[in-house]
Image 1 (cartoon, chains in turn orange, blue):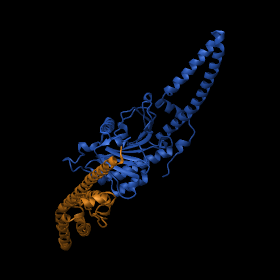
Image 2: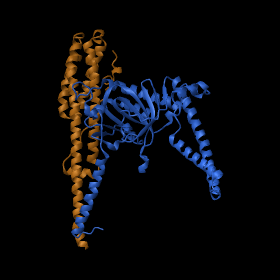
Image 3: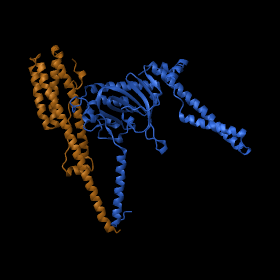
Length: 191
Length: 330
């Protein structure tokens, strides 16, 4: 077989390998991106679920501590801000989440200082549900950050970074939250 | 943790042997018995030939008699030493377990528990098994068919099983340095490398779309406990059971290791307990684990064989077509 015949064969083989690589990388990036979006969607669902608990929580505290109006208002405002921020991506949501966690901690501190709230069954049930939802948020957040990490690594690694640029794939921000002590661990909320 | 090991170290009494003999004693291994019987028969035949046989046979009969007699003596002495060691160890274990509220059984049976390693099609053997306090510890081996000259793929492993507060999705925590759970045969699974040092040791497997549920149970606290307590083991959550698998067989021989393993499993179950008790499956109305998530399915090996076979045939066909077209690659 002459060398001239080898040139198109080798070129075709290289083109085929390039095509297969582009195809598999594209599909892998689509898969990773979809997983990250799905995981973020789950985070927002869990954040909304917790937000839905807040009006009832505020109501049960309001009955016994109406004079703590500033704290109650702060929690309601932080809840609204968080719900809005979830639609603006992880970074905005993380900022709002930090403010919401502070407000929620203040609300729980108010409840702790009132014996009649501490023994209120409704409040205790809500508080239990809140802790459970915090655990789900934490799990959803870890899943999202893991998915975002996998996608970001793939986008930066060679040779997938070449195809990522060609196909206009972009990375995802991490959903980093500040210290959540007192919200996730029920032992830290002493009643 | 310090354990009371006095019941292990004390001299054995007649009552210890009686207790063990009455509840546990199993006959010697059949294969050993067959070999012994064969040499006994050979020795008897040699003796018979020596006494009654023709003259030309006597020399050979004497040689066979000496050889089989020597082998019989070596096997008898070796077997007795081995048997004595094993017997006294089991008697001690029996007494030790009784003293610590555990039950010891030599068993030698094919025990099928819900864990993935027990779902092999092959013949298996569990020996011994130690129970008590809602816990089961045992040594399990999966046997290959010797007649087909297959190599033993799976090493024997020690398992510990304890009950959890409620059923959870099927989750396997696979150790990178261990090979107890046969992951290659599982399908429809999600694989996760968790944060930090955890990913260097473990990979987490769960049913597809149950990743968040798995992370709900494997909180950072639980992950730390897994690393600290079971860094060389593999864990599995199936139904409402927690399984721990380790390749080390010491726990079924050494009393201190046995109690240490019991402590580890109980501490792990305690760590998992809170998350497992609070867990509910959002996908089902009752909150119980949906059917598909209760077990990760095993895929048949024939599918893999078919895939590789198909690939080879396709490659061969491509080679033939290229050859026909005049492209001689080799």
